[in-house]
Length: 341
Image (cartoon, rainbow, N blue to C red):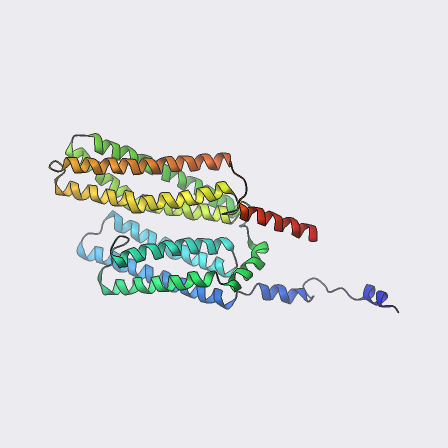
């Protein structure tokens, strides 16, 4: 019998029993760096949540708890669930899970660092909360470094083809939530702009005080939460579907603009609202000129945020720009894979 005959008659491994199957199973096992990154993210999240709980308890003990405390409690519960979900998606090899963890861990590092430096961010009450903030900061940095080690990148690339997209039903549900939340965000920013203009143009001190206190309530309860969940759902829809988060120029533009509007809200509009209410408490009738200047600054920042959100809505409708260089590389890889098969 010839070698050719032996080759032709050689038994073909059944599906699930050939030598490729152990390789596939091995490729699906997360590397050690993923496990340590998962642990670091969980520790950082628990430390941040504990710090937030201590802050809420301090507000209750000192009698300053109010609507903002309720918003903080809701956000704490939501982030506990979300970070746990993102961490599990990371262990499953989902690229969008790693993207979400990277973004929100980076934001946590930013605001925790500002709080520790006492130049912004969340206030730290007492040495215990400061210690928790340091633990959260250090473990977050360690987790971010581990997330992008070469072994992690290789493993994510291996499982990307099997787990890149989210199921269609989940995609529709997340897309519906994203549209609804984004509409709410646009409405809130529009209302903020209208109230800031009204506060800056009215000559009535009581109306000014009412406007700025209403803005403070909306900012503390709804604005931060709405923008955060708009970003989360948008990233899931982008990174978990065929569009990709950074593979289409219009999706990447929306992503970076969303981050910019969020930072504008947290870093500028929120601080101006606090300043306006401090001036109101100090006596708006006496210091009206300074209060008007703050009002116009708030109106300008709100108008910039409003125009950005309207522009993002138009971009979502028209989808005007093509693939980025990462998108072109992904298309080339897919074409090469199809030709090989």
